[in-house]
Length: 169
Image (cartoon, rainbow, N blue to C red; front, side):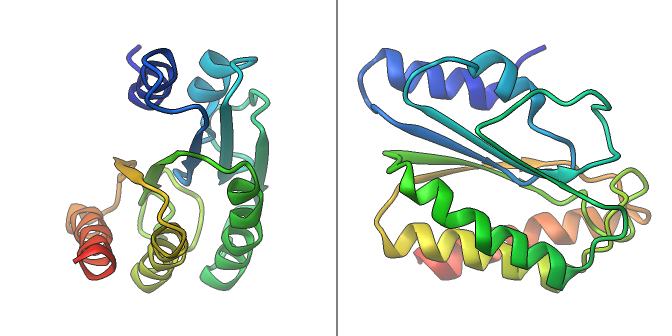
């Protein structure tokens, strides 16, 4: 397996470009690969918000894990993200690697959550707005997306990029 965020984090640390890297994994599946690869690596903080009953069924411990129940809605989800952000920021990352998963959509056949497009847009506004206001660089990775119809996945990814554009110009 190729884990892009873990490789980027390690490379940033090894080259001295960063001393502290945070991974904010908001894909509906736990960031177990990041957590396993980066376990014990100084200067790394992995935060994962995911479906508790979703793959992987045996979770790997991250710096912070928040497992959500099936059918979690926008209000519940956004509250969790809002409560999580201060923990990520207290780590004082030089950069945040943001896994902006869209598989929490209600129409996603594997996600098990009940998020709307508006909820995902609000999530991205919260995360990117907070990072921008603190001048913390962010690298965005798209994740997930198994919606039926597939256009829901495409529109959710487009929504994320619209938020990026409105936040960063």
